[in-house]
Length: 94
Image 1 (cartoon, rainbow, N blue to C red):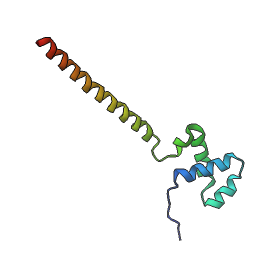
Image 2 (image 1 turned 180 degrees about the vertical axis):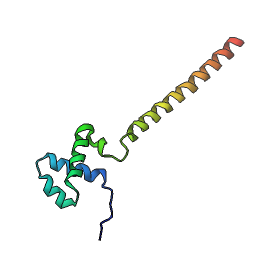
Image 3 (image 1 turned 90 degrees about the vertical axis):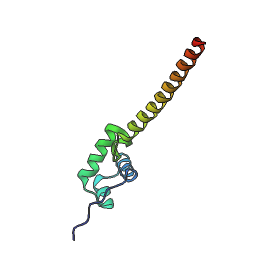
Image 4 (image 1 turned 90 degrees about the horizontal axis):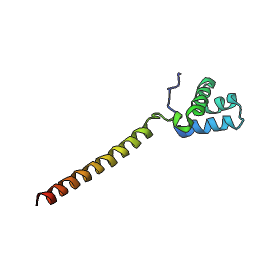
């Protein structure tokens, strides 16, 4: 019976990669977790390139959240500047 492909969590990938980097055999890790050696090797390479963010399902998620924070801050500043301009126009119009 063919085993269904299951996604591995970021936490598990990091654990496996760290154990590999600490000197454990890639073949032993592959047997223990029932994961092909080439997959663990790919995770190691991704981790080395991008750290733990490289193993997440969506590495751009943190950049998106940061962009949303910046947009929110800029929108708030924009609103404050509009109110300041309106206030100054009312004072000058009196």
